[in-house]
Length: 325
Image 1 (tube, rainbow, N blue to C red):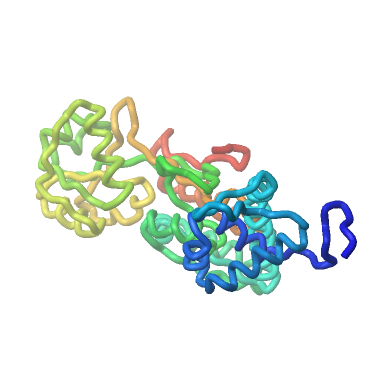
Image 2 (image 1 turned 180 degrees about the vertical axis):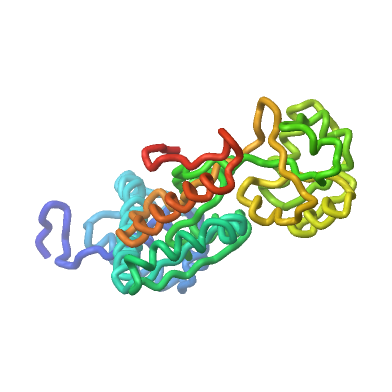
């Protein structure tokens, strides 16, 4: 067969063949590579031989016991992973677009966002997009971010963690924590309070995950050691304990609508507020559809409405769509 431009076969390489070669180039033996790919060793060897036949060159030095790439094999290895990754990303994007055209959206949000913001945002969205089916998942941050990475949902609304690999965060709201005490508490007469004043009260540590870590980090920055009287996971339980006069607690501002007990009063922090940044989260390689972008704008508007109705003066505020993480 005539060799032309280094190619000695009319056959073209496939993405699967490149995937097999890429795995083999990272393995010590063909058997190891076959096991990691879930195929037989003879099948892998035949695939490598076919690639070499197409290219008209040897990819591995077969004079050694372990797999050693030839110079040409090393050059192909450097490109194979990128080609396979780009192909998968493009295929995923096409799949996402096809799904969006069928009128389906899926998002994951913090429980506080689900109860305070999502109902208004969804009502606004359905006024202009009644044909779109939306799946709303209220979930803990760690699980929700995992769903975004795994493409199980289109986007999410969460606070920003320290590790943001593969994720893009677009700030949408600055949520200030509030001190919640009884109306007959010594703190109730104050317009604002400090950590030192809170430390003199029986403290109820409420919430879990990022909320708890944010509160704990704040009192450590204030050079205080606080031993909570109660450590409660559910917000409503914490509010019940405060209402019973068993201490004070801290809540993100998005939970303020839950403070309906007339015996309770929210108070702001003095000077340096404690807050968390709420962001729209998506994969860095994901392009959102027009309906998804429209839904995000509805959330922005709902955050603005919430601020107008419930926000503490001068603090908790929506972030404009021009802001970037």
